[in-house]
Image 1 (cartoon, rainbow, N blue to C red):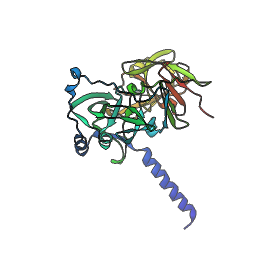
Image 2 (cartoon, one colour):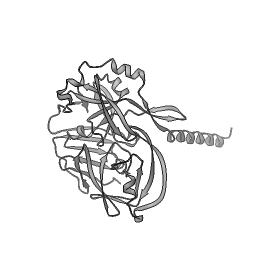
Image 3 (spheres, rainbow, N blue to C red):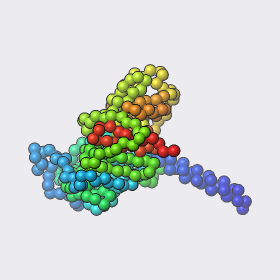
Image 4 (cartoon, rainbow, N blue to C red):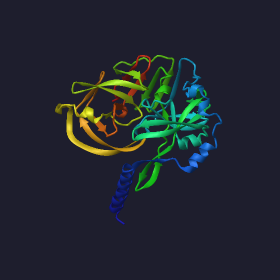
Length: 340
C-alpha cells in the first residue's frame, strides 16, 4: 500500500480523535445510589444540632510554622488552577478557587474515596454557576500538602452531584470538583500561581516581595468574595475575582446594556455550555475592545453572560500564561510579565 494514503488515514484518525475530545459536553447528574451508600458507611454520630446554637464553626487549627512556604505542582486541569493535597492520606486534586465561600468542598465520589465521615442530618444549600445545589457536611481529621500537615480537624462540604464530560451521550471523563475556597486561602499571607512554571506557592505568615516589573490591582474582601474594579469604556464595574472559573469576564446583561458602542470589538456572539457547582447552563460569548483592572490592561477581552448572571466576575482566563500572586497582606494581586 502506498505510504501516502496511510498517512492521510492516520491524519484523519488524529483529527477525528481531537474533534471528539473538543466536542465533549459537560454534564452534571445527581450522585449515584452506590456512592451515597459508601458515604453513609462512614457517617458520624455527631449531628449538626450539637454545634453551639446550631451554627457550624468553620475555624480550622493551622498546623504550619510561621515562615513556611508550601511549594506544589500547579496543574491546569480543565483550564483552572489545580494543586494536589491529601485528605485522610488520600491524594486528591484541588481547584484553587477564590470564588468559593466555603473553605473545603468535595464532590461526593472524592469524599467517598477519602472515607470522609459525613454528619448525620447536616445539609446546607450552595449556589454557583448553573444554579443551586445541596451539600452534606463531613468532618475531616487533617489536610496535608507538600508533605506537611496544614489543617487540623475541620468541616468540609460534600456536593451531592457528579461532574463529568460526555461524548455522544457516553461519559468519557469525570471532573473531580474539589475546591479550596477563599476562607482556606485567606489563612495564608500570599498564594502564588505560576502557570508558565507549573507550580504554586502558599506562604504562611511570610511576606511576599513583588519582583521588578510586576503590576497589580487592589481588592477588597466582603461577603466571602474578593472584589475588584473593572473599567470598560470609562465605566467602573465592581466584579469579584474567581480563580475557579475559566472565563475572562462574566458580565450581567444589565451591565452589557449600558456599555457604549465603542466598547465592542465585535457584535458577533456565540454560545457554549458552562459547568459549575450548580449544574450546566448555556452562556453567550462576545468580545470587548479592552478592560483595565488597576495597573493591568486586557485587550481584546472575551466576555460571557447568561440569564442567571447577577454579579460581574473576573475569572482565571486572563492569567493562564502569567505568574500571579494573591497578596492577602497588601490586599492586591500581583501580575508578573509573561516570560519571553
